[in-house]
Image (tube, rainbow, N blue to C red; front, side, top):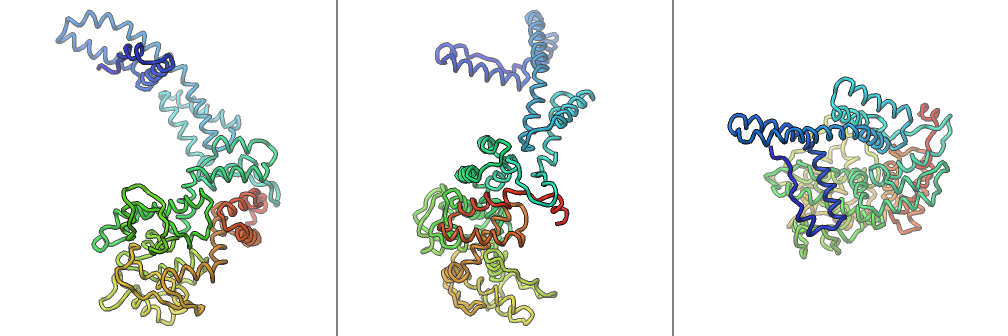
Length: 497
């Protein structure tokens, strides 16, 4: 019943400046407004008065004297609430413009105001009517989808500056444009490539680029939301559940660092650094890392790490619950990193056991399975990649004893272990790796599959990267200034597709 009560006069008089006192008053006013204290005080007073009539009649007179002032304060507050109602509705309309990422047409403003007024006419409270109007904003296709108006006819035409700002922001931040990007892209004249590149560079330096690491890189590699993965045998790997979050965080931080600091895309394979906390460093057998803070650690290749091939999240994801899977790992290298398409396995292929039978290694189990004539052709292409990574167990830990990681690829090249596989991908399959990265980044930026008509641009992207040290920003700048990114196809062409 006491509610909130101010007793800060000595504080104001002895310690606060005029500006600080004004801020304190404003904070109290906000608290009273949000808590609706003047209205609640009426209820509290009536409850206390009823109590006094039964047990404390000595309080009746002072409580009676308070009744009128309390009711006047409540009436004044209700009048204030009434005055703020149009402000709340205007705030919803302002939010709708941000949520829908464009200016509202007058008809849309009328519709939202009309919905609010209709709800109030149905005797819903102001708060309830505002909530439902807000729900209407957030369930609109204009919020849920990034809508763009196709060009007239069949030909492509430049997107508007507002649409271009949305494309750029959702590409690099997975979110709506900020105020600076909106200002830079303001106006009816199409924004110059120089402006677009400057804004792309600014967005890449921002911490929100972490979302690009999660939504693009981790999704491409198949490890997005790995920190919630429950796919391991807890009896065999009881430590996995505690480590999976750190494994995922290493991957996210690795890509965030590459994107924000303009690293080489070849670091995907060849990086000599990674990001570790103490727990993950112990899992990797790397000393000198103490505490839960994350830090960049150099010399990773000498410890069997560096790049995505040595990341526990990747190695664990492409393993079974109880054992490693050279097939999964090899197929991941083939499809994810090299962009190769393999035919579907024949029907009625026997399932491999979850645990390796006694007397066999995981490699021997796979080799026995792959010797079947119907399976041999595809397995010859993918299994060797997986055999090269057999030094790592099902949770990406280096095995305590050496295992056979020497293998011969389908093209006749012999490799050994992660180092041999890394060198092969960097040298013999360099073009395929770079092309696959460009293809995936372009498809993500455009929000569609890469098409045959995009092939000349992909070739141009690869040339630019080769001339500029394979820096990530080169790929981004090529995309955001491309006709694919800056144009939208005509309505007629869209219907044909």
